[in-house]
Image (cartoon, rainbow, N blue to C red):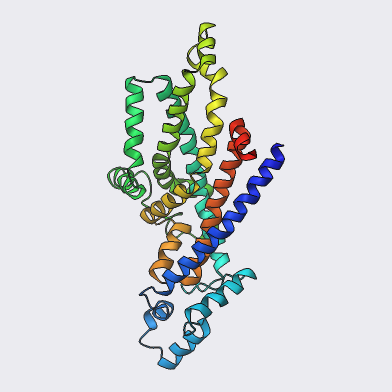
Amino acid sequence: MKTKLISKIILHKLAKFTFVLGGVTVLTFIILSYSPIDPIRAYIGADMLVVSEEQKEAIADYWGINDSKWQQFINWFSAIIQGDFGTSLLYRQDVLTIIKERFTASIWLMGTAWVLSGIVGFTFGLLAGMKEGSWIDWIIKNYCYLIASTPAFWVGILLVMCFSVWLPIFPVGLAAPIGMESENVTILDRIYHLVLPVLTLTIVGVANIALHTREKLIELLKSPYIRFARAQGLSGFRLIGNHAIRNISLPAISLHFASFGHLFGGAILAEQVFSYPGLGTTIVQAGLQSDVPLLLGIVIFSTIFVFLGNVLADILYVIVDPRMRESEAG
């Protein structure tokens, strides 16, 4: 029953994803097609005055810029179906190769921050829920409200000022020491440069999970079976560990999976602040240079990334909550 239901959810989500991806792709292509940035100028760069008009026209014909917008979309979409995402105008490389390289760097940043923010947020939520109405609850709750309305780039700038300028403990940015060849960069070097970007995403990522866990725990502590457990003499962490952790942890994990979109958006801002060579920095550079093939490739990839997070969240909800199974089955 559960396996069939999960298969049904996946098929339903795939159907919705097809329409969403199609709409996002078409809308993004239309917006980029009418960008004021000249793609020929972006491709040639500083040699714009040296290149002749005939060469510029040849470049435009090669990239299909002179074709109609509809024809450009048909050509691009036909290539996408065959697995060809095109060549980046900015990096002169295959789009999929660039996405793979930059996402490998970003996944270390996003993955570490995602795990840490989940652990810290869940712990904060437990403490606030157990001490409802106390000064601990007041501090954690107001901290979460403040962080929820604070952009990631502002937190990143504060961390740079504190720990790179005033207290020169960590590097200002980048993913490795300046001037060092990639084969000489150690794991410790990469971790050292990851500390501040990860700390930025962790700080801004704890709010939702902490507030959700707090509310769930407060609601659970008022339930009849918790009152019965208290009547039997259980209290404090023993009560929470035996009767509450499982009931509030799995829904919190599901919520955390659903935050992939927020995590990706925060990573873009954090990577800009720290000049971290990940997917976020790449999409900003591609946008400024009107690199349409690379932008469209990243849009498709990020849409799939967020979709996977939402699907995992829905599956976990069904596994954890019997009421969700009944609702989906109905």
